[in-house]
Amino acid sequence: MGIVIFDGIAYGMLLFLIAVGLSVTMGLMSFVNLAHGAFAMIGGYAAVTAMNQFGLGFFPALVASFVAAALVGGVLEFTLYRRLYRAHPLDQVLLSIGLVFVSVAVFTYFFGPTIQAFSPPESLTGSMSLMGLEVGRYRLFLIVCGFAILAGLLLVLNRTRYGAMVRAAVDNQRVARGTGIHVQRLFFLTFAFGCGLAGLGGALSLGILGLEPSFALKYLIFFLIVVCVGGAGTIIGPFVAALLVGIVDVAGKYYLPELGAFLIYVFMVITLLVRPNGLIPRKGL
Amino acid sequence: MSELLAFDQVTAGYGDAVVLDRMSFSLEAGKSLAILGRNGVGKTTLLETLMGHTRVMSGSIRWNGQDITRMPSHRRARSGLGWVPQEREVFPSLTVEENLTVVATPGPWNLKRVYELFPRLQERRSNYGNQLSGGEQQMLAIGRALMTNPKLLLLDEPMEGLAPIIVEELALVVKLLCESEGLASVVVEQHPVLTLSMTHHAIVLERGQVVHAGHSQALAEDTHLLHGLLGVGQRPQPSRPSMDAPAGYTLLPQGA
Ligand SMILES: Nc1ncnc2c1ncn2[C@@H]1O[C@H](COP(=O)(O)OP(=O)(O)OP(=O)(O)O)[C@@H](O)[C@H]1O
Ligand SMILES: [Mg+2]
Image (cartoon, rainbow over all chains, first blue to last red; front, side, top):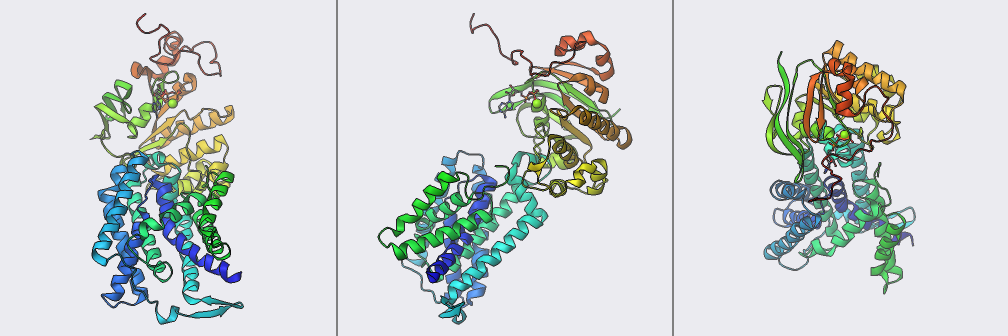
């Protein structure tokens, strides 16, 4: 029981890392970005390349994954995304799902369709005992990362002027612009940063999920569930939702193997019936 | 007598709908302007157009010696247009203090001075924007505009829905800002008496056009003209919304 919850939390942390950027960009720009998982995939492949081709260690490779995904995100925001902020959601869906297919094709072409080999560093392999539980070191590392990034994000969002600008723009874009906030630049930075986090999440997922070119599609539904259930535009919302989804999914597959894969959909439907704006809607909603 | 702001034949609206129809007016530096008119004539749209939130189909807007017709909103705000939107629209997920600091730019107005002007805001500094009364929200919206260190304050129905005592207080503040700080205002209002007493010049709108322009005092004294333009005058203004047909609406069936 304990270990199921622990593994569920670790899995949830991964979902959180990847989906939090989606939550902020969906809340901020109301952009339905189905390609978010592709940025996670970019991070994963960047880390694999950094380690296998350039012989970098795991931790420098994590930095590389963030930078690569943020860079690609920034370029795509500048060239494609910003043209569709005011467009119909269907156009946004078409653009971003198109990007997903492009990314699947590109990574298949360069890396092949198979799962990438990955071995975590010595310090993160094996297990250790924690409060009477034998837990995997890698999963423990994920949980620590998740909490650290949650704390960092909350600090930036709630205690800095940049964070206040983001909240202001999420609240009311028109008034934010009309009082001198450079919303377009805010979008650019936030989008690139969210993509960077997704990339980091993608790299961290190497030790758990297995990276192949269909990653961006395969896990898309999980990222969307996390954002919908959590409430777009917040950080705590997707955090709580990601942990719940992680635990429900792992526990479902463990205890009810034949039903397990459906359990999170049941969970999503029930939560959205009870709280249509998500578990933790933003203020003023 | 230098020109601070001028609309030159501005046609603007939302999407394909034209709301402002070849509108022209101008404003001198240091003078306040009242914009009067009944419900739905385009007063708010005028300010939204000035802030760059509508679609301008033709004409030009000059502000402070610059053509700003195509300038992005945030740059207009930073060039000295201090906008106070009609519904106040304070940021609900920011505290009172964050609402002020998030838009701050260097200049004579800072947190300390805004708190001096509205001590009530200091008392409520850690409350969130959605935990304020209507009057407090209005003070915050004005304080927020001041934090951008504007050259011109744009007030959209600042007195709407406020208790009479707060209305008087705010009117005093606006007058004071103009007299002692040289910070002029554009005041949009439906209720003319108070507004005319706060401003130097006035324009009256009707169906997106300027139908009267002149000195505020002269208009205030000419109750006959005022009544003709706004349907008010000697009799006190009823508090319910006007039952007049909206602009552009005709009671005759099409083609009759
Ligand atoms: N966002 C919008 N989209 C489309 N039409 C709008 C929009 N806002 C206002 N209008 C229309 O533009 C016209 C002018 O509205 P506006 O809000 O400028 O009038 P107003 O003079 O400020 O009225 P009020 O005294 O009620 O505030 C109205 O016919 C209104 O229906
Ligand atoms: Mg209005």
